[in-house]
Image (tube, rainbow, N blue to C red; front, top):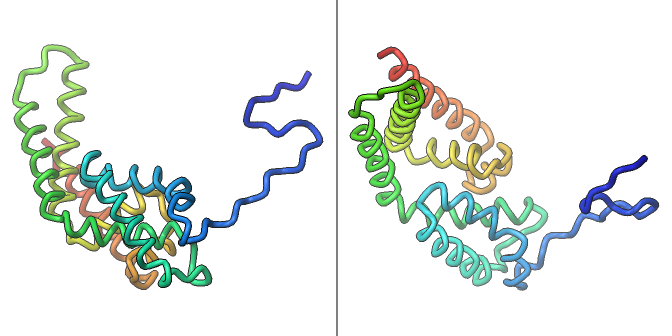
Length: 192
């Protein structure tokens, strides 16, 4: 007996053919193909409301600068992440303030006494969130961008290098440094 799902092609059907990237001149197709990825990434960085504005601006700028896109240099998505990252840098102060606010909110929330084990776990998790948010806010801009493109957008090293316009080695070292600082922040909180 064979079980198929709605995602499985019918028996004997040709495997799906990978779609070519949309034409940068086709704003709608570009949006349909990549908006979800960019929204997820930007939303994690600056919140849902600002992310929608940033992503909309990303596509408008991409359309206006479509002549700059060179498909031979890499995929379209990292190019769009690069534009999105530039826009997010404009929101840098807001991002750092938000991370500090999360850290402060989590710190105040954890001052309450935990009456049971589940509450204690929640308090520990809130403290960890506060430590990570504080550590993210303290990271240099490049390290934070590399870490977030890797962890949130799930880009490969080469794609991060393309998105930020930096050498691959810089991506690797920035990611290593950022991870080390985040691990230290978590370890420092665990020794209490």
